[in-house]
Image: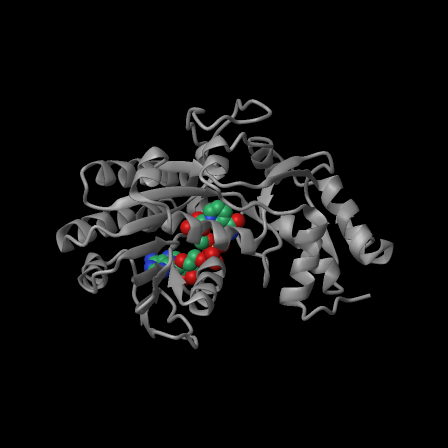
Length: 324
Ligand SMILES: NC(=O)c1ccc[n+]([C@@H]2O[C@H](COP(=O)([O-])OP(=O)(O)OC[C@H]3O[C@@H](n4cnc5c(N)ncnc54)[C@H](O)[C@@H]3O)[C@@H](O)[C@H]2O)c1
């Protein structure tokens, strides 16, 4: 089993590569090689198989042809620019998030290797008005360029799969909380910030109302979900070419309550309400909960709750030690 990860230097890509290195297998087949690709040279890793790292820009079709010539059995397409950046730079958003996806599909088609392609899509494919619980077959009406680029990518993956050029699946990842590292340019960045920063002894701005409800998953459930998607049978993948990942529906208040339970009132006091009308406007269009019938039927994993997500962040990212 030969695996390519595009966007391997990113938050999810790095964790996915490490997890596959530890597992040594995908869908009960031993991994024999892994190619890690990103605009920034990805870090290597110790694994029971050969790992190659490559700095390449996916907007260059020749770079995509090179990686298709490597003849992967599975491709994780995670390379993208995030929502805030795609909204600020229209041309670059379309070049990276859409045109490169099309070129990737064409390169895989030309190489005739028909890999399982797992495309990281997003809840941004949905737009208001939305029901409180969004069913699997709800219309996609994105309200951002990023959401439009992901929705078009999903259609391309489904059509290239229908024609038999790839065996694709688009997984709409919930918002990942707690994202480690520095804040990024996603409008959702504060959802990780209000947990991560206080646990690191820093103050965090909360730009929205505490009653805001959203759909989240931990980094480890996101990674296990991507691996699960890669391991579905061709029949299972054909039954759900695009699907929303399982998450938990929480309010900001519930997130803060869980933080208080895990870390105490002094840590929670580092969160400061600083309403930001621009962020509030964006957030108002976000889905709050999903039925996720397809993902449940196909056995995708799910988090055990907000407290467990915070405890996992402290154990995995802070070595079990948080600021008092
Ligand atoms: N993190 C989330 O909450 C979330 C939610 C839904 C969907 N997603 C999607 O999951 C994927 C991974 O997300 P992430 O949080 O790891 O993002 P990230 O920003 O940490 O990683 C994305 C990677 O893509 C790379 N990249 C960007 N442009 C590139 C180019 N032109 N050529 C090559 N590489 C390029 C970046 O260098 C970066 O390492 C993305 O497609 C994102 O849209 C993430």
